[in-house]
Every structure is written in structure tokens, then in C-alpha cells.
Amino acid sequence: MQAIYVLAKSYKSYRSLDRMSGVIKYKEAIAVGLVILYASLIREPHLRLPEVAFADKWSHLLAYALLGATLAWDLIRTQQKTGLVWLIGMSVPMVYGGAIEIVQGAFFYPRVAEWMDWIADVAGTIIGCGLVAGVWQLKNSNI
Image 1 (tube, rainbow, N blue to C red):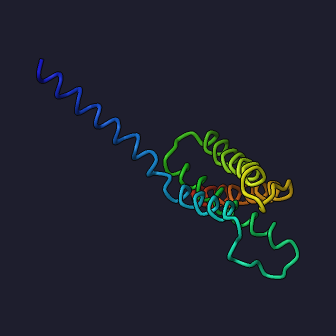
Image 2: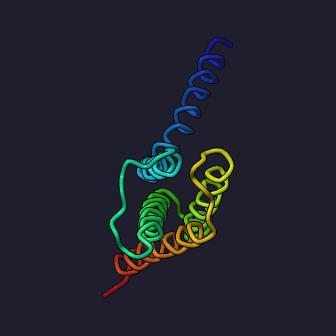
């Protein structure tokens, strides 16, 4: 009976380690997401954007292209089902961007929620995931 208890306890420890390693598999995407969260929720950004037309929208596009690309790449490395990879890789950053916009507008005055920011987030996500898909296709093609 003692042996069963030891086996069950070690299996439970293994399963909790396995769950944690699941999060660690996505450490790059999580890091990018946390940087985006910080940059989105600070009350007064210390970084002044250059005097370029739509600089704010370009920064959203680039940040979410990076988030979409890192999440898609992390998912490709860890998952076998490519359809699921693209569904998660595209939807998570889009929902994340929308949620940040809502939180910004509700709780972080003088920050405001803008539809165009979210549209730039969506466009960046599509570009980032599309780039990873293209690289993945080239890597796995028989050229």
C-alpha cells in the first residue's frame, strides 16, 4: 500500500511539473504580452513617439505582430495540430488587445480606448502569424 501512495504522490508531482512546463513553453509570448501590458497601462508614457503620421497605430501594429509571431512560433513548436495553432495564435492576441483597450478606457485615465488601436492590434496579429506561417511553409517544403 505504501508503494501505491509513493507512486501516486510522485505522479501528482510530475503532473504539476508538466502543467508548469506547459506555461514555460510559451515564455517568449508571455514576455512580449507582459511588455505590451505594461506599455499599455502606464498612466503617462515616458517614451515619446516620433513625429510620424499614425505613430501610435504603427506601434500597436508592430507590438502585436511580434506577439502574434512569438505565440504562433511557440505554438508550432509545442503542438501537433496546425489548425489549432492558427486559431489560438490569431485569436488570443486579438482578444488580449481588445481587453487591454477596454481596461485602458475604464481604469487608466488619461489613457483612452480607441477602436483604431484595436484594429491595428488585429492587423499586427495577422501580419505576425502570417509571417510565421510563411516561414513554416518554407521550412517544411520540399524545395
